[in-house]
Length: 151
Image 1 (cartoon, rainbow, N blue to C red):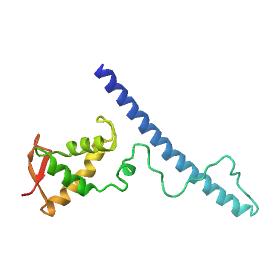
Image 2 (cartoon, helix red, strand yellow; image 1 turned 180 degrees about the horizontal axis):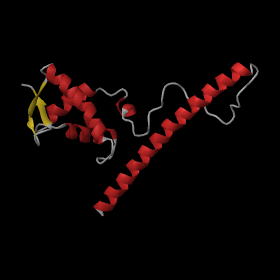
Image 3 (cartoon, helix red, strand yellow; image 1 turned 60 degrees about the horizontal axis):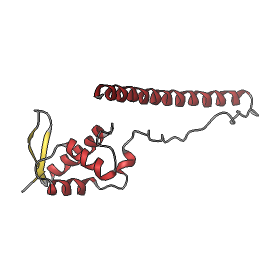
Image 4 (cartoon, rainbow, N blue to C red; image 1 turned 180 degrees about the vertical axis):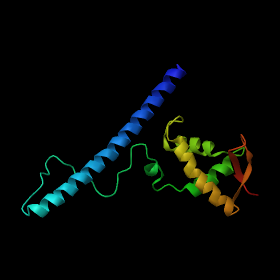
């Protein structure tokens, strides 16, 4: 059963990547269409493009559904990290922070965005370590650090 779920998750991620590629292609085609409209207007000053079938996008791209930006909007990561480390009974990794964050915000513990969430916490952990508020407490597998409150 686990293999089936893993395969479904992989296919879902593939679909998300395809959707993102299509969005990029659509944006490029819309830009080309706008360029054609400008050139046509130089030849025919009274030309008005048919806007009924096109949707104009704003310059600012809307975040994809998998984006974690909305999750962190208005969220104080620094105080979350310090509070979580103080209440922890052992040193924590970025993956541990991501799981605690997921629990507090109502995300599933196996959410596909946990890796990205951990990366956001990694930035905060590095900043707090530079400020001597926390320290590295060793490594898990020779690559990933564990963190604890500096005494």
